[in-house]
Amino acid sequence: MNERSNTRRFTKKAASEAKRLRTRALLMDAAVTVFARRGVEGAAVSEITAEAAVAIGTFYYHFKDKSELVDIVGHEVAAQLVAEVDEVMTSIDNGTERVALGTQCFLRFAAADPEWGHLIVNALTDMRDFRDRISAGIRKDVAIGMKQKGFEVPVNELLLTSVLVVVATGLRAILSGERARATEMQTAALVLQLLGISVRKAHDLVSAVSPLLSQIALRPKATEERGRSTSRRRASS
Image (cartoon, rainbow, N blue to C red; front, side, top):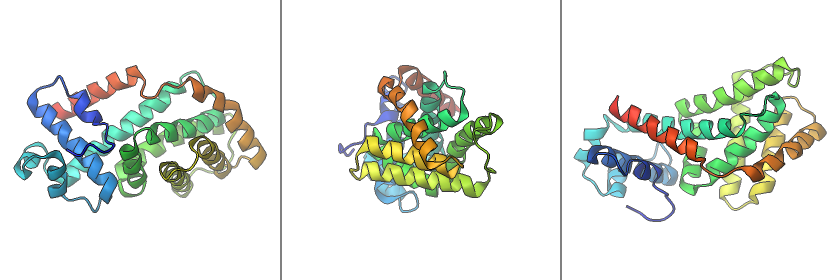
């Protein structure tokens, strides 16, 4: 398998599992690589199996078709990101602060592994299940903010789509070499402005929560353990 930048997260998690689960994880990591390179729509099963160095028949032993693989990979990636962001924000109950910090955390976690980051950029436009899971987290924090009178704009699908476009654009910029810290803050401020916060207040909120980012250890251990459990449950279902 290609050694470029894929950290083989699924393969590492399945290292102590049975061979069947290790092979399945290998195919999932190969899919991340190919999806990041080709996009979800442009990826072919033959390219995924070549990346994993397995026969095409092996792919169809583990997955019904590419659509099933896309759903599973998208679910796992979204679940891990949402869990990581939620874990950081357990002590924050202010809705506007949760959006300000959550946006920055999402970008930091997503960009930590370039191949996952490129996959996420594509997933935010090509993978509906992924978009729905991410937007559900945003919707939850916005609902908290609305209840607290921090947000007063009506939340609809157009607004949430616009927020995700801004986040995807920020992530793409970071992956392209833009200054990560500045881009995280700018993106979070733009998201807050879309939600009706004034320019000045948006920047103040982002600056206020930013020091918490220095306390974040990428890929918290507890989240990794939850990811392993999730992978095992889905693989056995």
